[in-house]
Image (tube, rainbow, N blue to C red; front, side):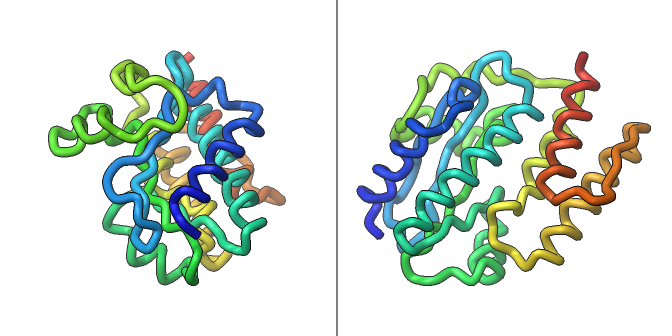
Length: 204
């Protein structure tokens, strides 16, 4: 698959996605060669809580992966550059699969001086780059960062590893914030979403 075709799939996904108003910006920075990883920027719209945005981002990646699979490939998403080799190996990347490095609010709040300008000058697919300047800090930012970093729901990891990563870190977040959520009978996505809701509710 060439980048042009993938960009068309992104655009189609944006058109289909019912929660798109909760996303402030979608774009790419750096190399657009699909043989390497793609730096994919996706950030919340103004006043959208970060937990809600993380859920929206999950749903967007799920729909994107579904649309890419129609072309015989898959999306392998990862949240931090040092996880690239791990994701490529554990996700069993094949020719045509898209290795997607997710760049989001942790890279902008506080702004990382080496990447901030590059992000602001990214190739826009959707939204307004001014939205990148409007992401505020919260008292739960450390916990939101943990949730962002452990999101392997769309990395195509072995299911056992995915479960261990999600359950372990969600348990940590809940325990250290004197909270409680149920795990029994829930998918990893449901557990992840429950933790997103828990953090957002702590801001009310």
